[in-house]
Image (spheres, rainbow, N blue to C red):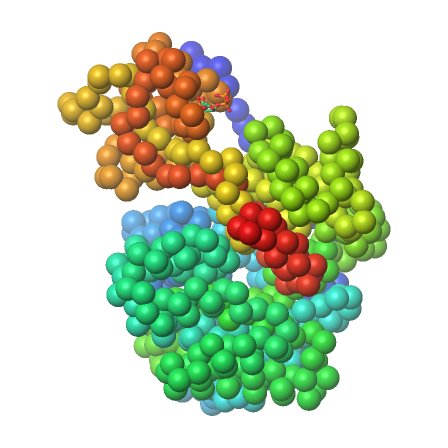
Length: 554
Ligand code: PRP
């Protein structure tokens, strides 16, 4: 039998699939402890434990909206040819369960659960596809008191597992939804605006909105992601939205009432506000919230009110709830116990992209008045500090800058937009730094009519995702060949018909007999920020962004 190299008949009987893992001893015990703590808090508060199946029909998760991208769900087909998915979420199956098995039961219903969910993450991202969640759902009650009950329970649950530096962030997704109803934009434009607000990508949001009718609504949408912080944010929101729409005034008033009630109950130190909290806006209807703990770079709790979800299953009932990522809490408890983290000196940690962007980034730091001696004389050192600034800088390859920021081991990063587009990820993209300017282009040998003929074109590139997205948008099938560098060689050697690559001066294309067929995207360096750091270290990060903004934009 002939087997190609690397595809020999392997038996995968001694390892677990990527994204899953065995847990034993300290880890499994710690997780058990966290789960027991959460469950007893939920049950003591009157929440009844339920279990839903590990598999559900795909239709459950795509009733009226597609709540999860289909690429992120693990699927299989049953013996009748129907698509099943490994549960990617717990709230939707519970909504299904309530609307079917518990219809007619006295309301409100208080349910809690602890079960794994399955979502596909990009390979080698260091993220698990199987996550243990503990959570609660309060169904059939739309009152202010039910929102307070859930928020209080969230604070109690997190503080029972982690006392230090805990934050609960509240927002109101209804404001975003109303503003979006008031703009004239295509579905694609709306999706982009949604994405830019969620990512606090102020620059991209502005330029997208500038293409629409310039009115108060677009101006307010630009402000929305900037409205986050302590209680002062509410006053700011009241001012900005005054006389716009009485419904929004009421929503702000509601958030204020929630904030004041939490303050009254002694939770003020924990509560922060973000009017730009618009993740999963299809799912949530009004109040949304998240929980953060120290040294974990992602939200450990997320939840909100989902008054329309049960209607999808034929039972129109208001509901609210949250899920806690037990694995993140376990990880944090173990790390604390081990005390093995790089000693946290309280400094902000910034990752800089080595190579092309390095000089310009240092120039920027100088323009900000930083002493850059350590950076310029770093030699082979990869982690250095900036004197008198409480800032540590590390040097990494572009894609790794994103990895470090996503995982929260670095608070901020300076990275090219080319890498952001190719790698993607969850972080805030807060500033266009203006340097490292270049563009993504499609290029082919001079004189070739690239779009002619019917054969499937072959494209070589270092950026397969960008290339796939570009041609998918055109509805054009292409064959992509990933090349690691000197991509221009591929058409010369007839390996490919064209390339998708970065063009800066255009010299490399010219000297290799290629010309641009189409420009895809202007690119430059960006400042990215870890989501949790942005909330937990807001003052320090805000002041750094402000200084950077001033140095870049004057
Ligand atoms: C980049 C890019 C092009 C070249 C474009 O390559 O992939 O080859 O620069 O620059 P120009 O328009 O100014 O000529 P890089 O230098 O990063 O090397 P690589 O191809 O080996 O990755």
